[in-house]
Amino acid sequence: MKDSVIRSRPPRRAVPGAIAAGVFDLSVHFEGLANPTRLAIVEILARRGEVRVSELAELCLVSQPRMSWHLRTLRHAQVVSTRRDGREVFCRLDREAIDRNLRSFVQILGAGADPKGAAEPSRATEALPAPVSEGVS
Image: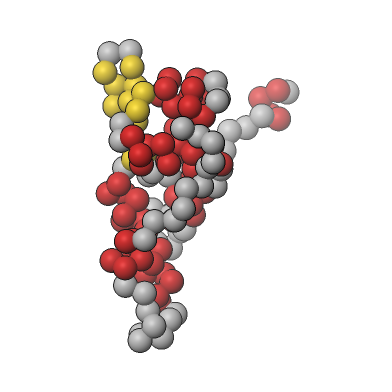
């Protein structure tokens, strides 16, 4: 009975169809960023580069299992990547994947715009927003 009530959802995939076949779904990327703790993780990694998972958990005031859950979500969303060194796990931003997804998003925004007013991907990626999390060091 318990098994019939608790079902795990399969990970989301790209929208089916010829246009999106094999393409990473941007909604997964943005869904990964749709949490204050995960945004704090991104901000910390942007400032510090590579950080141990246990240190991230301390900085974000969450338990190690909860931090691992957030990092799994961010890895699936192509925001962070991890590496293991012995018993320690280090994570860093996957800047190439973030750039690729941001460029795809900018293309979507520019698709319906006037060609004279269409945003260029290089200009859109230059400006960084103000920090999302306050009080996280």
